[in-house]
Image 1 (cartoon, one colour):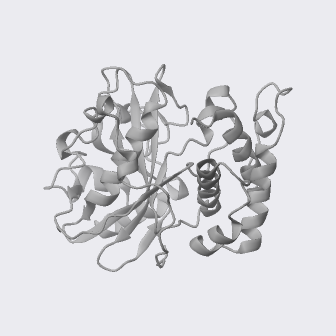
Image 2: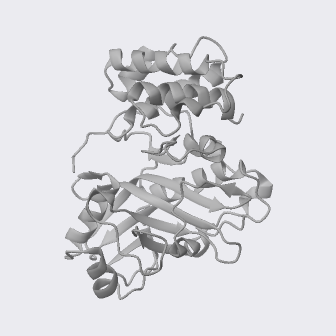
Length: 335
């Protein structure tokens, strides 16, 4: 767990820029009770990016996590995992039955059985669920970082987030928290609970623009074309003044790509100095990663069985990650 200083604004996203089209806007809840109800029967796959961004903006800027009635946190890094067989076949989602509900806490389990034990050690994690049993959709918003609003301390990493929750709720294990403290009532917005989300009441609460970037730690060790497509989807959301140490360089690559596709000139390496300064990253590292990104983007994959086949069943090095993302941008980026 670390205490990190904030950085200046860099993202090109604004809250206005993630406004939904009129025909989609009504499908995202405007109050606590329906915030996580998607009503997505008529969605196509590309609709979810904007919807996730809108929900993330609300969770990060308009809600706070309350633990044990006295510890107040901001959600600083969250990732979206959502599976529906036809509309959004993202098999990186756990697909546990608990994720077919909405607005519940889901502490990660060892398998998909309803009685499976909770994950332990560095594999712990907690989601906000947003699925539906009616159409067999599974949804989980993984909380990766939280910031104590009273002390400024940041807990980074899904395991450390759960450890902090257990510690501040005076529990030694997830089972104790769920059964003894929460009485198995896992509703996220239950203000009588030991652990809940509530709307921020302060009228002057500062809002931050949101950066969307790829999720942490995903690979193609279990390969498929669907997994290629979802590998680098920008389903990780952070406020623009917070750069988590885990896969920080991925955020730099995203910002470089945003500038390149926005400006429609230069190359993916054109803004190395700017990005190094704004994200407080070593210039040589930024340049190296941007070169790998450009090399990936320029790679001819036309004779390969699949664009990212070279990364099947492998772990990613930093260079691999940048190159693979470059290939992905060329092949799968939606305009």
